[in-house]
Image (cartoon, rainbow, N blue to C red; front, side):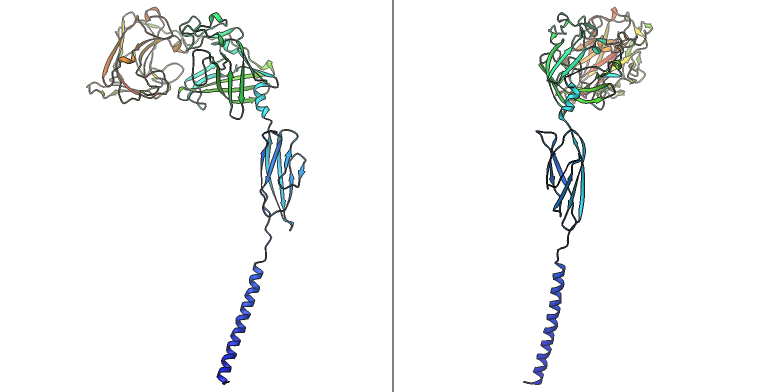
Length: 506
């Protein structure tokens, strides 16, 4: 063999040896990197309360990198099971701690607060162990009407124990644990607005006997008197239902979906909350009618009867008698803010502090029919649907025989819902009557005679009112001090735009 060949073989062998050495070293290093490294435990769990037994709780273990478990259930009991089920002896709040460990001795803790609640506890807040009697709360506002639970009194400021309706504060509503519901009128009933209108018992307390329980339509409503019914209550959603002809709470006309004039076979309402105070409990209930408003009532049940205030039997005089005025002119053209005599839209209705009282009204806008004289624009966007005119005097009508107003009803309004084409002129008394609508008279336009997109003049004889809670003519009273124009119907929140001009008495 040649020397040159020997040298080549030697070099190749040396290169192979070096490569083998590098390869061997690399393999040893990779094997070392692949050795498992122990990971620290992570403790975690969830729990579920049994639907059959509220004291029984199942725990599901979601821990990682652990093989040994220690549970502390917060009541002095422990477990080493992976996912145990534990039965507590009583309701209460417990801190549950899970310790998860591995074979290397590393461990981690995880804790959660667990509240065990007897489902009967919420039910018993309403019924007591056997029964519980509730009456309207005699402090502050016990009932009101507003646009929502968050704003429950912006439509009606509310009922108070001030002597105006004392019979309502004596009535008792008893819920029994066995599902029985009892109403006791204690011999007196209230002539509710919208139910007893135009009867001798309207807006007064009267004797609760069947012969007196005839509503505005002549229908017997005596099922609302004292009686025994049934109820169901789901505390998880706060819904309660009274079952039985005439069962009610709040006021009789409050039904499941709106106000009624006759007794119902069942009534569903919300129990918003029951709060335990010292010596008594307070229950807030609500009837949610959406755009038609939210009725709220507050009831009290006393474990210490000495804390319950007395019922105020007689109301203090409201307001004052205004001086008489016998005008020869009384009008508003709405062409400008000054073109009126007495009928000023800036007058403030007592108790609200609202000029114009709740509607968006603008003087002196362009006539939608193209006339040269500006008119008034009447937008229904407020809490009341009337444009109101409160007077500083009791008006005597000796010089007037008619009342009239021009109205323009645009076809752009949506009359498919609560908005209607009704038009009415209202006369009443507000300086000494807290709620003018309990004794007003009204002059109404037949909605079928309303023509869209043109001016129409509506004139009424003062001695011939067509509706209202009162039964009189303006000549029979000397205390009338309130006027209003109502357009669009009684839906408080139904929006609409109308135009008016020449509201006048002649």
